[in-house]
Amino acid sequence: MKKKIFTALLVGSIILSVTACGSTKSNDSAVSAKNEVSQDKTEKVKEPVDLTGTWKSEDNDGSWMEATINDNTISIDWVSDNGDTKSIYWVGSYTAPTEYSDEYTWTSTNDKEQTESALLASSDDTKDFTYSDSDKELSYQASMMGTTTTVRMTKSE
Image 1 (tube, rainbow, N blue to C red):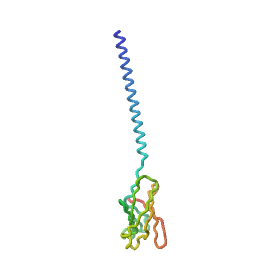
Image 2 (cartoon, one colour):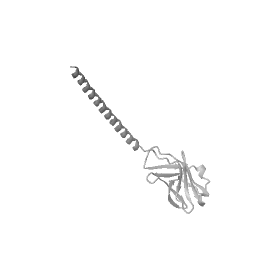
Image 3 (tube, one colour):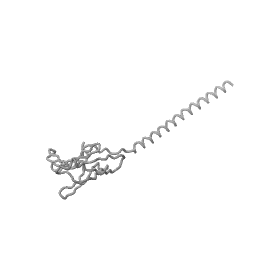
């Protein structure tokens, strides 16, 4: 009788220990699977692009356009003489993106106090700027002496 009770207890202990180990593994697997799902969700959420900094158009025989974007202002200069001369082209408002988008466009309002006495400044009241995430490029239209061109800039390092 004592042998039967001892054997029953031993078998019961083995069953409990195997069951306990099995449930821990499935728990670990469930936690691991849950973490993988939450990591996937985290990776899919993209932040809005940060456009603050300095942007530069292509160098054209020692001349280019250079933009500086900070908290709420974009300013653009004509740069010539290999960087020795800068002339104001645009100073206006900047509205940062609040969510991710492949393309971001905002309308900047000219700060006439800063541009009205600048000889090479744009006289436009507003100017549309577009950032393309696929090209990593900031673009806008610039006009001078009856000619309009699309200026494309990339962020300087």
